[in-house]
Image (cartoon, rainbow, N blue to C red; front, side, top):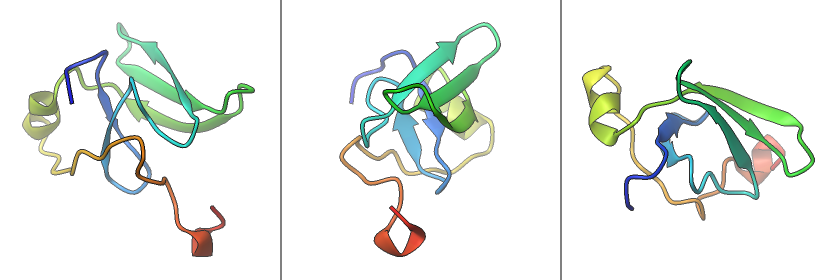
Length: 81
């Protein structure tokens, strides 16, 4: 994946690109506040996260997270997804 607007950690502890969060979600980014709001296409907030500008920034924060593509589901059927 290329370095886009940045990365965030999803609710399963996986790193995701703000350019492709998956499941049809959209990222609203505040770069100054380092904030990511993940919403549905209709605007419902489903997740809030810290914005990391690079994968190295995630590692520097002491977080070990696998980078997953947007095609990776956010949840499993037994979790209601």
